[in-house]
Length: 341
Image 1 (cartoon, helix red, strand yellow):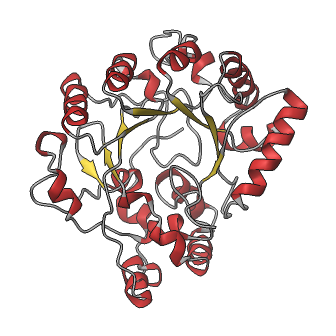
Image 2 (cartoon, rainbow, N blue to C red; image 1 turned 30 degrees about the vertical axis):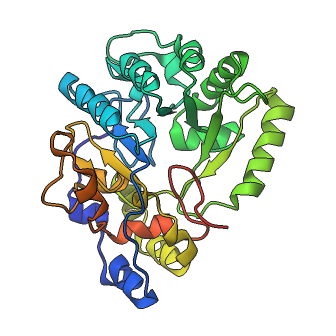
């Protein structure tokens, strides 16, 4: 996989026809921040996979990671702000960060709900650069009571491997078995295993409730596997997926599809209204997608962990771009799945 940076203008594609702010203005919609309930931290761009839809452009060759002083700043911030009740750890594969276990333990001691964006296969692959095993993760997750959120594009091998790489489906099932064995996804255990569905290609997800029922039936009957919730997430037209769309001549039609499916109710529920995203250098963004496009928060007094100002961030204007159409099409899309019926 070629990890050469792609020019922002090429990947963001801010066509006048897809101007999100103009769309909000035409609909009379104002979407100010509502809270900062979740701190979402991108710990590293290192990953054991290189999925073609990855908006972070993660891969086994990346080396970016939040430094120790950044980890300390995250914990200090969580301790000072009880309003921030959730720590959402993402990457890359966040478990590949050298202080991952330490950060999770400390956040749990602070009483925070910790969520980990876990790609499942890292349990089997381990660290792609050092060879360090990550087989301990299911037991560690259960010990700390973290919520595990894992991508599984489909319950069939062909579609999953087409999006995430050869052999990923089989490894993912093995990893789910290990999580089920320690209680994840089992009713009454209190250990949450939630799956994420991304369409394979330039399509909108089907209805979340129906897909969840299909996933539960197929995974249970075919493989004896269990999980709690299914989150549907629209493929965002940025970075690696945008490049794929452009090379295949589908970018304009995909953007038109997102625009035609704009849903005001989904817009009201966009995740950036209750979340702050942090990159591996400690800089702040309205969401993970803005982070990948380099669109830092618009506030002169709070742009990083070092100068985090809760009130200034609550008063900020959220930055929009044409990619925001992906979060507001159909039933909506967020890190917690659909945002509207």
